[in-house]
Amino acid sequence: MTNCEKSTASSQQNCFSNDVSSRISKINCGCIPCDTPSIIIQGDQSNQISVPILANVIQNCVCTNKYEAAYPNYLVIETNLLKSPASGSTATIPYGNICITNISYSYSCIGVGPSLVAPYSTNTITGSIDGKQFILSPTSLACSCGTPVTNLYTDFSGNVKTSSCCCNQASQPYAQSKIVERNISFYICNLSMNVSGTIGNQPFTGVIKGATTPELVANPPLAVTVFQNATPISNGLGFPSSFNFAEIMCLPTNTKLKLTENFDICFSIDCVKPMSSSYSVKDDPTTSPTSSIPDTSLYANFLASADLGLIINKTMYATIIEKLAVLTNQGSSVVCNNNDITPQCPSHSSCLNATPCPSPSIID
Image 1 (tube, rainbow, N blue to C red):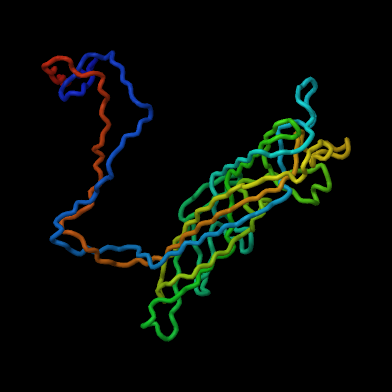
Image 2: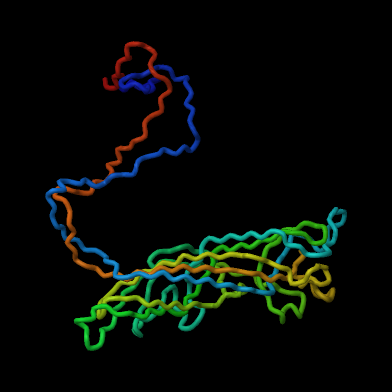
């Protein structure tokens, strides 16, 4: 039978101690530094050889940056202040000047979703190169949200073929190609927009819960349409329903290419202002003008305008799969980590005897 009871490894090799009362103390969730891994064996650099490989060779790439601003009106902010505080409450009916002092917002991701304009493509990008149509398909999911679930994507790829250069193909192997992508619709997952400030002398917190129209405001009480999830950046936020992109790249003529592109997008709220400088329950858009129709919210609501920003960074690569001969050293190779970085048992205490105690015998 084994003989492992009450034996703990010490910091000395082949040394064990029966002291099991020692306490281990260390930094919680500590970071263990390591050197940059070296996975290449150089071999004999005086004896070089050619190795055939199949590689995606970049023919050209282009970065496109768009900055869009939107100024939506009639955003509906619902506060945490009751329009009619409960009897006996120390709270008072909200009334007075509206002052928004802080804004905060968060979201999971922004990506390409189903097109909001004809032909309503689903999570693909339709474009043309030199007038010939191509389709880029999503390669990996960026995020998903909502019910039913909406999937958003930021990485796409597809195959295209460039046109021949008229009359002088042999002497002109490269030519400028115009690449156009149309009707790309962007969505935001799990968008949350919040404000805080004061109404009169009462502090409040509020959420931008949706948007409305002047026609609906003119016929109170207002039934607020809450922003859907995922949120199209056009619905109530004031951005275009779709975007077009165009680039000119110098590419090989009459050649099959793979287009790969990535979107890096961010959304910002720079300013939120109340559309009316003061608040009263009577002027609340969710307050009913008659007692026969109930209010559509128990809380103080007001309308606001906003200054929003959208930054779109897009990178596109045009690549060709080529058979290449790569110059390397004879004997060089790639060596992967064999997972020999194995955690060691912590040392409770070292042996105190001058002569190390013997290794335990664990086999009968």
